Length: 382
Image (tube, rainbow, N blue to C red; front, side, top):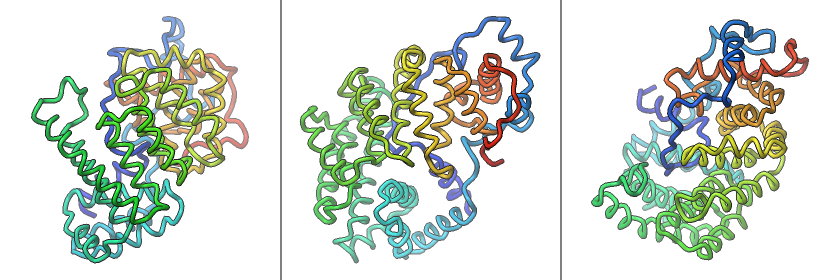
């Protein structure tokens, strides 16, 4: 396996959301899991025995990734698709994305894999579009590539930190991406992917609330619980783009209420709290006022299949915010489910993610009754 594709797979599998993310900032020097009294810190440091609470030992904690590695057969499948594409054969890529059928979250995830492959060499994509001009997946991938390239030029900094020339290029490229997405939506009217691209471009094109709601209605008519689509919409409604904290939180709460069994959609509320933390550090305070809602998020995520790509990162955020909300038993349960992995937000924003993660689970343990590993509770596989 090439180093390039290895990096591609590690970066994509387990990713929480779609592309075109903006930078997340955290409070410098903040303690993960809320403030603690010196005596509590001392207990965590000197007396906390993870095994007594059903947690993995400190010695096996791993900050290399957010969760377990994907099955080898999935890695081999993506490698084969990449190798075929780079050799000029687009057919395995077409089959790969089409195999997701009407599982639109999975279909989008596979489209993102193909996008990463095309970032290295997109000749195969152009050949695919030439030979199958009415293929909705090819058209969607092309539109997504265009908006992705525009965002690469812009970068992830806040707008006032982006050089003027790069911002001009970014804005000049967006209409082409939007037009390509509109064309893709006409090729396959059932496919929600073009509408995900449109709401992503609409954010940067400063669409009005009414204009955005029109696009959103089209997306949700096709895929009402589309995870990446909701993440993009959450960004539109946040205060740094075209909404406010209230509008963003209202949108996230509605996602929790509507999340169907098996969907990670309730995790939108955790992303909203992270957004608050990135712009002033108020996510923890909001969490403390939202304990019941967070416990509902925990229940909803408990219905999600263990191999869902979004789940590991969401569990880390959930453990953190349950701890902030002082729902210690619920937080400890998430730490048990997470197991050895700590390569995710918020721990990886620390100079020592392992220490930050271990301290947080120690705080949760300090405030619950000492207990052995509960029967029926399983940690993530090692």
